[in-house]
Structure formats: structure tokens, C-alpha cells
Length: 172
Ligand SMILES: C[S@@+](CC[C@H](N)C(=O)[O-])C[C@H]1O[C@@H](n2cnc3c(N)ncnc32)[C@H](O)[C@@H]1O
Image (cartoon, rainbow, N blue to C red; front, side, top):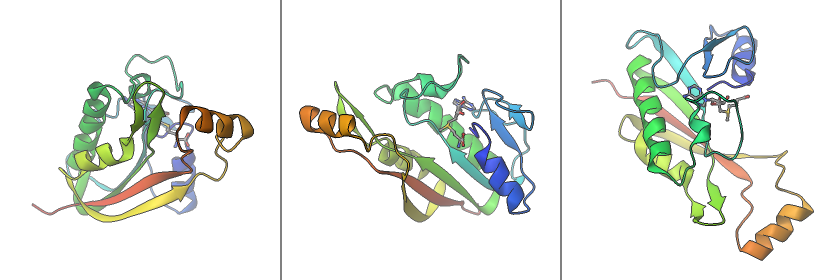
């Protein structure tokens, strides 16, 4: 789920050996692959970073297996991300760490959906929590007059952060 490859660039800057996958191949150094089935051996990687979709609010690609096509109002969305989490657990070496970035959501029909917390509950099945960090969305597009007006009109808060869950695979 490395999208345009920001994570790959940062990993390279830090001198790490990096492999980036996405369902939609945005550039040559990204491998086209479904996050629910990674072509890597069990217990083979030192660190995983993932920036998953948090609903169908952004159109990432036309790929039919894009989880970002499924609304977080549907259980199917969390079932898909649960498979991604289980696969992360499989490939990570024991005692190594993964970080998962995700935000919450608001829908006119269903109201506030705590997507981050729902996902955190799923991750707790596989990983032990090291820390939870709130990442400020400095350039967020919702900090504008039109969104302030909508928030007042439809009675919701403008969310200015995402969660970064930092978790460890426990030794079995
Ligand atoms: C929030 S974006 C990641 C953005 C990225 N951090 C960047 O800097 O561009 C989520 C990504 O998940 C990808 N994605 C959705 N479903 C997927 C799946 N089943 N397998 C792999 N990637 C998937 C989308 O194509 C999208 O690029």
C-alpha cells in the first residue's frame, strides 16, 4: 500500500533495504501486488510500514481489488484490512516492529466511524502495542471555509490527525 512511493524514498534516504508493493503500480520501483498476499517468506522482514486506505473517500485506481473502493461503513472493509494485518504478522520476524497509519471517518448517513480504533482492535489480535502517535495533517484540505461551513451545518468535527500505531510481533 505504498502508493506514490513516499515510504520507499524515505527508506532509501535512511539507507534501508526496501521493497514497496501496491495494488496499482505507480512507478517502476513499486511491485504490483495485493497486500493480502505478499510474495515473501514467513519471518523474513525487519520492519513494515503501511499507510492503508481508511474508506472509499479517495479514488486510488480502477483496480478491482483496491480496498479503497470499499466503504468503511461495510464490515468487508475491515475484513480486507484484517487479512492485510495477518499477512504483515506472517512476514515480520519475531520481536520486530510494524507501523500502521490510518485515520477516522465521518459519513452523512452513518455519522462518525472510528476507523482507526476499529483497525487498532484488529491489530491487537496479532501485535503488542509499543506506542500510538497522533500525526497532524498539516496540509489537510478540510481546513477551508467550505469544510468549516459543512461541519457546522451537518454537525461533525474536522479531524486534523491520523493515528500511527507502532506495534511489535511477539516471540512465540
Ligand atoms: C493511503 S494510500 C497510500 C499513500 C502513500 N503513502 C503515498 O505516499 O502515496 C493507500 C494505498 O493502498 C493501495 N491499496 C488499496 N488496496 C490495496 C490492496 N488490496 N493491495 C495493495 N495495495 C492496495 C492503494 O492503491 C493506495 O495506493
